[in-house]
Every structure is written in structure tokens, then in C-alpha cells.
Amino acid sequence: MALQLTEANFQSEVIDSDQPVLVDFWAEWCGPCKMIGPVIDQVSAELEGQAKVAKVNVDDARELAVKYGVRSIPLLLFFKNGEVKDQIVGANVTKDQLKSKLLALA
Image (cartoon, rainbow, N blue to C red; front, side):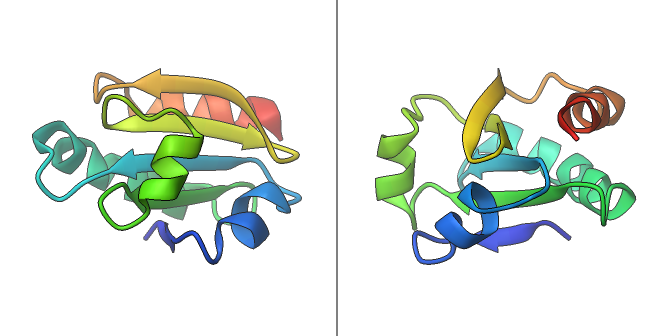
């Protein structure tokens, strides 16, 4: 299961992480977000110990959504050493694509 992020734990879990981090910006009302949710959880389970996978509910963490320029969801951001290195907008992505992008940052 992906880690649930808030404005309170984003710094420690993402910015200060020594592992690459995939952050899924999503919302309850977003159909494509619900479609990709199980894929995100599978990536989290399969890469445990190698990378972090986390989720930000944009309705609960509006400041983070604004800070990272979230205009469309789902928005998947790939972080390494606290910086955004890559992104995917939308749910048209496979589990293998997500895993390979994350592992390339490791």
C-alpha cells in the first residue's frame, strides 16, 4: 500500500528521502485516479526497500498541489534527492513503465 502524504510529512518522506520516490497526486472524485490506484499499490509492494511510493490527496493537501503545479490529475511525479526528475500526467501508464522509471533513479 502506498504511503499517504500530507503537508506535515512530505518533507521527511519525499524531500529528505535517500530513495527515489513516486508521488501520485489524486482525488476521490477522479475516475482515472481510481483506475491507476491499484497499479500504484502494486508498484509500492514490488519495490519495497528500493523506492518509495506515496499518494497526495489534492483536496486534503492543496498547498502541495499548488507548489508542484498540479493542473490535471492523476499527476505522477518522480523525485530523487528532493527534486522532481520526471512526471507522467494521466492514467495511461503500465506498472512496468512506472517501475522502470523509479529504478532508473535508484
